[in-house]
Picture 1 (cartoon, rainbow, N blue to C red):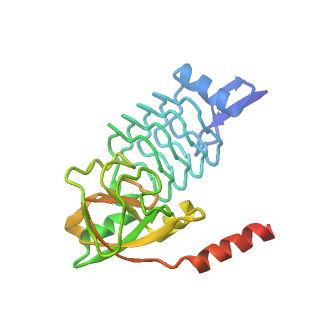
Picture 2: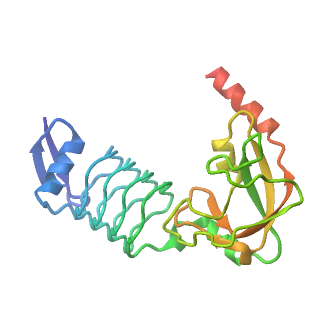
Picture 3: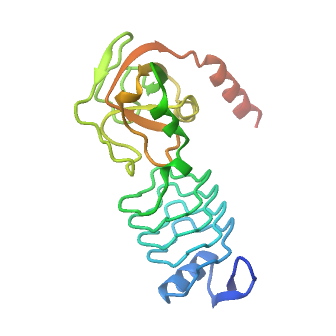
Length: 244
């Protein structure tokens, strides 16, 4: 099957090749060092594609599925990645200068060494750093009151917890520290038997707000002040699954 990659503005063909899928066509273009700048790849399914070192400057990748794609050292300067799925994508050493990442899903993405990224344009939770006084967020724990993913601390009400050397690197979505989250994140990850605790902290206690976080951030210190009653949310979710 013949696939054509077109210019986002003029519609002219930038690259054309016979391939068994669109992903293979794009990979062929990258392998042959084709200039894909300003390419129209909006809504394309490029999951797990190897696009390392690709020239995608100013390309339209809005709403594209780039989950687990290899974009290491790719030139994405000025690219439109609005609402793109970049979950677990490798963006190490990628050029993201002036790229539009609004609404993009970067959960678990590797941003180590990426340049030009502007966290303020894609990380709403940076608002936490400007809050005055006590702030509250949520901690997802198992029925044994330990963290749902990495454990290590058993949480109790009205106790203060502190980590001496938290991971402060915003390019790391997960790392050492007390990982807190928004309520919607906790509900997405909730399983039968889990609990959602309420944690209180201040802006000075925040160790890291990961760039383009999906709802998680890390603090070095917090107090557990309560537990969130999620029975109503869980009931609605179960009704929705049963009615589907």
